Amino acid sequence: MKFYIIISLCVISLFASCTQKYKNNNPYVNDNNHPNYHLVYSGDIHFSLDSTTSYFFRASEYNEKDTTYSFLYNKDLLVYSYNNQKLLKKIQLKTPMPTSYSIINSDSIIVFDYLENSVGFYDDSGMGYSKKIINHTIPYFPFPSCKISPICYEEGEIIYWGNFAGEYLNENSENRRLMGIFNMDNSDIKYYVPYIDFYYNTNWGGGLFRWVYADYNPDQRIFIVSLPAAHELLIVSKEGELLKRVYSGSKYIDTIESFSLLKLDMADSDERTKHFVENHSYSNVLYDPYNRVYYRIAEIKSEYVGAMGWKKNISVVILNEQFQRIGETFIGNCNSNYRYAIFVNETGLHIPQESSEDFLSFKIYKYEINE
Amino acid sequence: MLLVMTSCHTEINRFQEFILTHEQLNVSPDVEFIIIVPNQGCGGCITYMEDFYKNNKYNEKILFIFTNVISKKMLAYKIGEVGENTYIDYKNEFIKCYPEGKSIYPCVLEIKNNSVKNIYYQSPKEDGISIIRSKLKI
Image 1 (cartoon, chains in turn purple, green):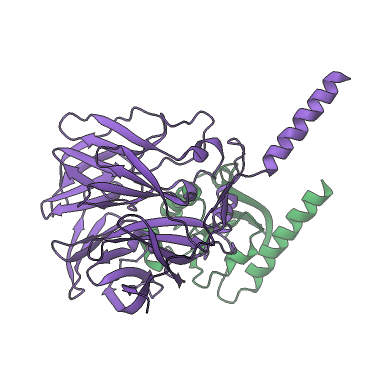
Image 2: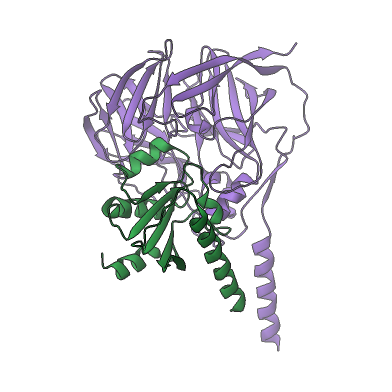
């Protein structure tokens, strides 16, 4: 009899755990003490796309030195002049599955290949040279499956960010990390920066909530990292040291709920995407070197209408160089692909918009003080 | 069991009715399978079906329908030249026939005497393509 009581209690506890979720509450959601700055719409810019190129890409980059905007569509790297929006070149990369890149100069394009697990340098004819396979030494290693974080190259080392999909019973801060530093000379790989603790202890669906967004401030030599379920940003040195965590929550986000408490509680991708859409989240963080501020994107939960067509409205949290919240601007609707195309330049914050497939269109927002 | 059977029957009826009444879709009497491929959904399942399409796009016994098209250009890149037995559902109408939770998977309709006889899915738990390969010996 005792045995059956114990079994029953275990079953009830398991059931209770399955239905419970971790709630990451925003402690300062009602704090509006410093709404001094905001973003103001100032105009549009459009890049014409040819008959085979769509704006559904997953990697892009604005290059300040050349004033070019580029993006990776399948295996083609398209480089546009920002000033006149003309296509300057279309480079077919000779690698099976490029997923992220960074243009150092015309003869040096760093490209990550997801299929090969490789990183290498490519020239502007698309030919690779100095390509290396990364032999990972931890089970849940970072690798850029798209470009939502920067790639830096310094003294023979490539610094990059990424995530490993899925939820795992045995994951911890040692075997699942977000930043990699790869030495191109000796192929040595080192990993830095774990997730915030609550990520390891709960189930976040293994997909979109696990992504790692980041940007780089070259003046301070720091990375700023945004995790979708965290109200804080991680500030990391170029050497991989976690310097501090800073609050940067949105006034539109009160709480973010996990998918489940149990790591083993996995559903199909439709249910996990539904969970993501019907919860708030954060995405990109961008450094604006012209105004010396940071923009962090908050995604407001919405109704899930299926794998196709779901969207979230966005708001932009503005922080100064000391990471103090100095404003927030609700933007609303934008292109569903925005997270891969959004960028900052001297003209302002460029947020991609819905348009026909023949154009890549942006709305430009300027940073201003409230009057 | 009765509930499962009723559910399957409703699913079949939904696809059946839509296919029979669709103005632009002409299903040849030679067609033994209709494969519906959503453009967005379960990545691995869809890619597998897209590869199957490239090798079987001229097979007169199979009608391919691409639905849930978010990008015409992306679809063109993935499937290349379109075969004669292919319908591109630009209005994304066929996705509405799917039962809840299944719209991310390619769907195989077995056709007999102008009716939908069975439904199979291409998903991590089900291998619709194997049914086609077995019955058409391809």
